[in-house]
Amino acid sequence: MEAVADRIEMHKNIGDQRNKWNSLLRNSINALTLVAATMAGITSMSEGDAIAVALSSTAMYVAVTRMLSIVNKIQPSQLAEEQCNATRLFKQLHNQIQTILSIGNPNLILVKEFMDKVLALDRAFPLPLLGAMLDKFPATVEPAVWWPHNGRKQPKTSKGYNGWNGKLEEEMREIVNVIKRKDEEEYLNMGEKALKFNKILAMSGPVLTGVVRRWLATKPYCGIPSTTTAAPCSRAY
Image (cartoon, rainbow, N blue to C red; front, side):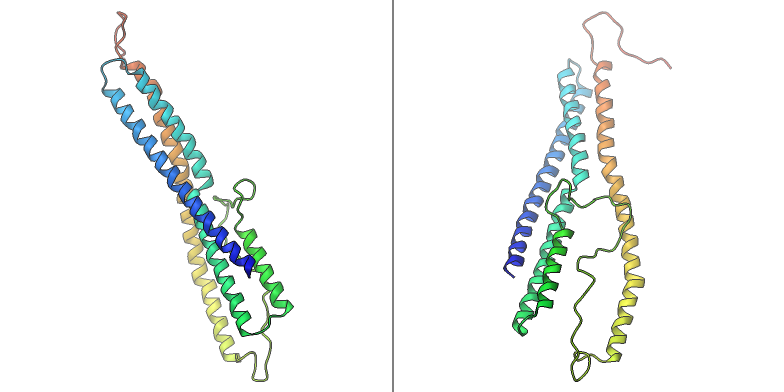
């Protein structure tokens, strides 16, 4: 139980840390984009030599493009959400252990079951970012499964199956089947749509900033007056 409590505190602290990373990266990207756009506007309206301003704006757009590519790959907001889910599930497991201990003496089967659940959560929510990070853009959307499939069977008593009768068991099976048929299908459809939308947003950000950077790199050389007697830049149609 102490190991579970330690994991709760660890995932909570890591979740807060990654949430701060997300805020820092988001604010940095927004600030760089705003400054680069302002400098690009100054360049387009300037009548003098604005090559230095244009180059500075281009460099900022290059930095924004690279930062967006990295951020969209690792998804810091999802990393923080994963740690929140891990904290919630470890708290749930901690409460289950406390309930079992308060009811009576746990046996080896219960101890093994809780150990398997702790290891399953460790595999479901890895801490390292490189190599073990969860795939943010999976090929298929599948239901999340955290707990091991081999659950503990309730012991039978003289009054029946631990207080349950056949009618209650049949009703619970019907409820589970309804959830599998309807709710699971609905959530999977919503998940697939959200995944496609997330992919579009992840690709559109770096592409748009790259297009602006490309346009800005060629813009100053067509609008700045030259010291020579050459004619101004123009296009013949």
